[in-house]
Each structure stands twice: as C-alpha cells, then as structure tokens.
Amino acid sequence: MKIEFYQKLAKVAPEKTVFATNSSTLLPSQFAAYTGRPEKFVALHFANEIWKHNTGEVMKHPGTSDEVFESLLVFAKQIGMVPLAIHKEQPGYIVNSLLVPLLSAGMDLWIRDVADIETVDKTWMVATGAPLGPFGILDVVGITTAYNINKMVADKTKDPVKLKIADKLKAEFIDKGKLGVETGEGFYKYPNPSFKQKDFLK
Amino acid sequence: MKIEFYQKLAKVAPEKTVFATNSSTLLPSQFAAYTGRPEKFVALHFANEIWKHNTGEVMKHPGTSDEVFESLLVFAKQIGMVPLAIHKEQPGYIVNSLLVPLLSAGMDLWIRDVADIETVDKTWMVATGAPLGPFGILDVVGITTAYNINKMVADKTKDPVKLKIADKLKAEFIDKGKLGVETGEGFYKYPNPSFKQKDFLK
Image 1 (cartoon, each protein chain N blue to C red):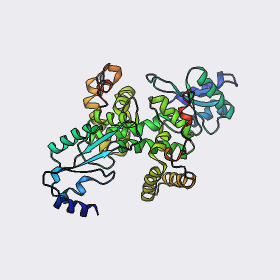
Image 2: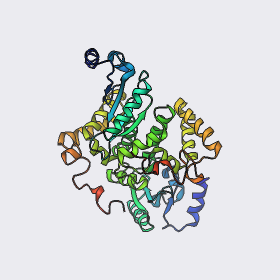
Image 3: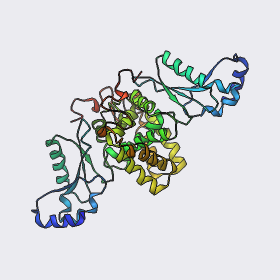
C-alpha cells in the first residue's frame, strides 16, 4: 500500500519535492525506488508527543543525498525539534534502539519477581538521576505499545519470559483498561504517581 | 578463596552475627553454606561512589531469613543509602541489570556508525530528560569496566559487534589512557564535557 502511494505521489509531485516518511518501523530504502527521487527521500521521525522535549530524528537511506539530509536537519530545527542525524538506516531510529533494551530489562526483573516495579524505578532514578524509571517510561509510552512489541518478539522467539510478560500485560493491564498515563492508570496511578512523591527517592 | 574466608569467619564470629557480601558478580547462594549461618547471610551492594546518590541494593539468597533481610534494609538506610530490596538473587543486582542493556545499545549504534556519540547521548537526554546519555554514563562507570564486560561477552559469544567494540575500546581509549571521568578524558573531555554546554540540547 505504501509502495502504491509513493508511486502515485511520484507522478504528481514536482521533481524538486523532497519526500519524508515518518514511519516508525519500516526502513526508507524499502520505498526509495518507488518515489522517483531516491536522493530526495529521507525519514523524519518525531518522538512521542508526550515527552517534554521533541526529538526530530532524521535518517538517511543509502541513496539519500547529503544535501537533502542536511536540509531536513535544518528543517527539523526550524519547526522546533532537536535535529538528530542518523547516518545509517535501521529500525527503531535512536530513541527506540535505546529504550527497548532498557524497558525490556526492567520488565524482565519484574516478571521474574526479582524486585517490584517501584524498587526498579527507584533504583534507576537514584543511580542515574533520571526523572523516570523504566515503568514510569512504560506508562508514558503506553502499555499497548509495550504489549505489541513484547507479543511480536514472544511470537517470534517463543522466549518464555517474553510470553509471560505479554500475557501479564494483556490480562492485568490492557483487559482492565490500564493503558498508562493516557487512561490515568498503568503501572502507576496518575496524575500523582508514587514516584513523584517527595520521599520516593529516600 | 572466598569459601575459605567464610569458613574461617564462621568459626570466629558469634552465632548472632549477620554476614553481608558486597560482591558485584558472585551470587550469595554460592557461599551461604560455608558461613555457618545461611539465614543470616545476605548481599549488600553499594553503587559506584561517583553517582550523586547512593544505592544500597540488598539481595536475598533463598536461605536468607526475612528478619535479616529487613534488618539489612533498615541498616542501609541508617548509613545514608537508599535501601532497595531484591527478593531473588541474580547477577548484577538491579542497577547493572538495567544499565548494561542500555549502554550496550548505545555502543552498538556507535560501532555500526549509525550515529555519533554526541547524537546518541543528545537523543537520550532530550527524549527521556536524563542528565546523562549512554556515553556520559560510560565515562562515569569507566572505560576499563566497559571494556572488561564487552571483552567477556565477546570472548564467550564471538559476536562480531562485541569484538569490534572491545577492540576499539582497547586501542582508542585504554591504550591512550582515556579511561573516562577519572582520567579527565573518555568519550568526552572533563571537567567541561560538551554535553553539559548550554546549547547541547538544542
């Protein structure tokens, strides 16, 4: 469907027009050939709007021209994003490449009963000075997204820990409408989650 | 050697004495039997002293009594640590279980030339509000420790990415005396690393 879209767009858009995709998971090189202007095709990814700051990740595919790449970085800055240059295309850009391993490690500790979610978050917040721990971040990202990623990996790898995480996210969160900050409850209750209380880090 | 140590200590210490190990990598259950008091044996792990805040991770082994576990949590708090309860023993406690995957993901992006270290750190700092990105944290942890962990995994798994990371940390950092914050240079130069400059997050 995306291929067809780009083929149609290629016909109607002026030759000079730069195409930018905001896809989170598909690589730009999968579509570059269909745009009729691979050198003017690039990925521009905006982070989750709930973060305080705005990341504008600009990702090349092998055929993107340096000029277009640079101009997109300038554009991202002009519209108030922090421009972040990704020189080699890969799934997940930078934010998700870093976040997924951290969040997985947190859920792993939780599902194996090593420590409760507040202790995991407290440890991270105290040790690194971060404003949110893995479960606080998961509530922002949304439990549905966390579930989808875990389910995909669980189905693919049959990893019993991932399967258990996916089952638990479904049964105890999604089925109960606890989808994170957006519904007022996820791992924590909002607007006053325990990790924001004065004595949490003591 | 540790076993012999605990066997000797078991003979001379009063029966009521609680033994606590601060080992970073060995599990308490490996030694519990030699202490002559497995129910009074527990792990108490202090984080890297360079962090602003102090984590006191208290980890049970299967034979630690609840009473001793609770008393160590109280003790950790009394000596100014944030007490963190780990109910099931595992290598790396909580801090390292979370940090290692994040730092690995950052080094993976760097070694594959996806993005430079400043862009990786900037992305993390902007997206999550954290005071340090993966490479800023690596400089605090120390390049030698990062090298040792990568080398161990690389030797075990023969993962070409890990091997490349280990080689580069050795040749471009350790051999040049760039060991991180402690030597004034690692991925960044101290005391005024670029990520602390006013415009870094713009």
